[in-house]
Amino acid sequence: MPVPANLEFFIDPSRCIGCNACVQACSECDTHKGYSMIQLDYLDRASSPQTVPVVCMHCDSPTCAEVCPADAIKRMGDGVVQTARKPRCIACNNCVLACPFGVPKMHTAMQLMMKCDMCYDRASVGKKPMCTSVCPSQALFYGTREEIERLRPQSRPIKAFKFGQQIITTKVNLMVPKGAVIEHLDVVAAMAEATVGNRMNEDDVLLAGIELDE
Amino acid sequence: MNRDDPEQLTITPDGRPTEEQPRWRQDFPIDWPQDEYRSRRDFAKLLGLTSLAFVVGQAWIVILSLLRKTRDRPQVREVAAVDEVPVGGSKLFNYPRQGDLCVLVRVSADEFVAYGQRCTHLSCPVIPRPDLGRFYCPCHEGWFDLFTGQPLAGPPRRPLPYVALQVRDGRVYAIGVGEGVV
Image 1: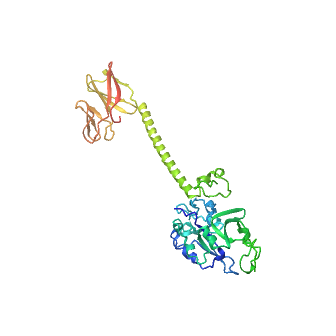
Image 2: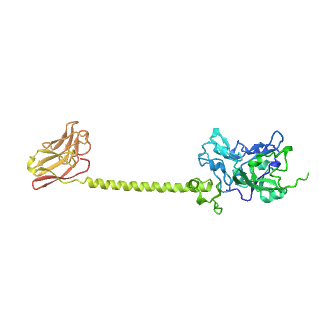
């Protein structure tokens, strides 16, 4: 059964409070029981407590699958990129190195790459993925586009990212300020900017085009 | 990429349509439905090729047996003149191939019999004993009937291979072999 097309995944890192609830809940999902697929990243730990939950973005052109020499990583008809097929995976680590978002996790003891599959056992029957069901601040949100528009009037979703010359479109949405003019997030350029803490400035890519009234 | 095809979801990194993609990309699709489709197709191919192999194998067997039949058709060969062998006497000859040793025995004035000379037990040459109406194998005391080639005593269990004969114009011809290898 495919994941319903009207239900989408929305990530809003600015709402993340770093509680680790998603990380714990993730490990309880039956498709990867005991292993958490979420990486909770600190953006700039020295100056800010800001964290970002990293879940799979389920790219339209999955780089992990593109680089897989064993043809082990597959994308379902509904767009969800799955964990490597166990009979095919050769644990070569290519996907781990290639993924622009740093999602795949290698389990060397099992000779298997495992990654976030949007809790396929749950999502495919219309339930929310584990992480979105527990996130107290709804930094990870799963629902319809109408719901997110009603709940987040200050934000809008984008699903395009730029890595060097390559523009990657994804199934999962990232929330940006509503007034932001950007159409895609240039990840390499954004890395050079300090986007958190006191050093935040008006050149921020996400704040471009927004009137800051302090 | 053709977005109308529900099974063709993945957008290739260069964004060009499926037709312009290299062959390996069609052979190793990222999309699960496409991959399943390829597996089904491969399975059908396997079934088809296996059946074809069976058909070719059967045809090969038929051809081989036809060839063997043509090659091994027993030719008519003169064995001896009637006068050459006295009644109760015998003569060795090769039939149907060189090295297939057979023995011709004149049983009576107008009666000849011929058999392969190798004992069906362990291939010792049998000795005709027309006086006893038998063939005798001295290796293990084997006995065969002179007129039928059937084993009578001793270790042999199978009859001596039989050579069909024809007497024509005072000459004896071998015209074929019976069941069993001469």
